[in-house]
Image (cartoon, rainbow, N blue to C red; front, side, top):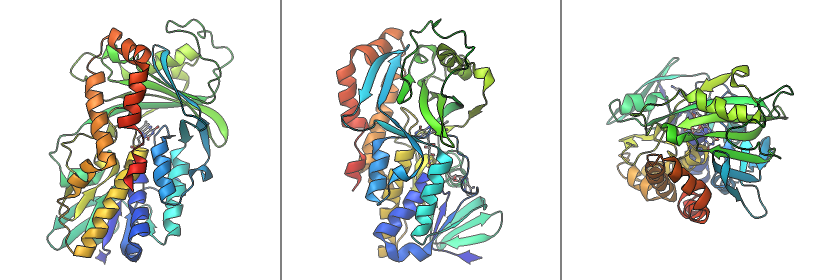
Length: 395
Ligand SMILES: Cc1cc2nc3c(=O)[nH]c(=O)nc-3n(C[C@H](O)[C@H](O)[C@H](O)COP(=O)(O)OP(=O)(O)OC[C@H]3O[C@@H](n4cnc5c(N)ncnc54)[C@H](O)[C@@H]3O)c2cc1C
């Protein structure tokens, strides 16, 4: 049996952020950390790659510059209902940065290794058994004994299944498609839109359209600029929190196909992929003695399914919890939940959870029009105060 004091299961943004924060704040723990990752970098991860400013703030606090990763800057974000609504632009800077997750996670893993932290790839955790003396972690290769385990293994991960097999699960359905940046030249449906005019100059604009909500799809369709191997592309997708799951809903792909056809793309021409997102609810459990969970394992943002900045934020909190536990030589983690909920991250997650339960069940068309087209200043103010800008307060 191999012994390592801090085992992090999963080398995505939440696991790597936990390790990087430990390295920054408790450097004496570096040789005691091991990250177990089932894939091999650069590994594929289904994700639109939209990085909000809070993610960049947390990375900057770690001394990392995300512009080292190939990216596309987005100047305008549209929050629309049927192609008309609210345009968000930040003075003198980008509103969103779009990365590809294989490249971003590979970069972050390299930065983690540069700090002297060991990452083992192609090793899959199969079982996690905490007891008073430590945590036994069984993998497809060997068994580890650890003082502390961090479950950072994402929405489908093993940690949650082992530690909280009966806890309620709130999971969004998400589909994603990558297309060229321009529709094929023979596209005939452009300008025949039932939803409005095709927007011009879309290269640096990201769209969220909530036209799906009156059809009981409690989410939106997105359309982001992105790049793949340096070539300009678009990333499309549809997000459904499942908050309206009790009502009759069309197939998820129908909403995506509708939005794509408005711009001249035929969904059937492209490969469609799906992955769930486990989202945050204040009742979600976060720890047991010797085991902490971070990132999607606890829950991403329910409102938009935004999870990269959130995962980085969980990592900062978990590192503090672990570092202090080693100082006290006590690993109950019974205050971790209070730490998360009382933090700037916890406050934004609670705010987004409340907003999701307000704006999605009020699914009438007139309400969505009111929200995205008429109440613009109020929506921007609420977003500025309660949804964004939490990264700076994570110090
Ligand atoms: C279609 C889609 C689009 C999205 N778009 C955005 C977006 O634009 N912006 C945004 O902020 N968020 C987005 N998200 C959410 C975001 O991808 C997640 O919130 C984020 O990846 C969570 O990070 P994580 O580190 O918690 O988990 P993950 O990124 O899922 O990482 C978990 C890691 O654990 C590893 N692992 C899993 N099981 C095991 C095991 N048994 N043993 C060892 N290793 C294991 C996995 O290989 C993986 O590397 C999107 C999600 C989806 C599905």
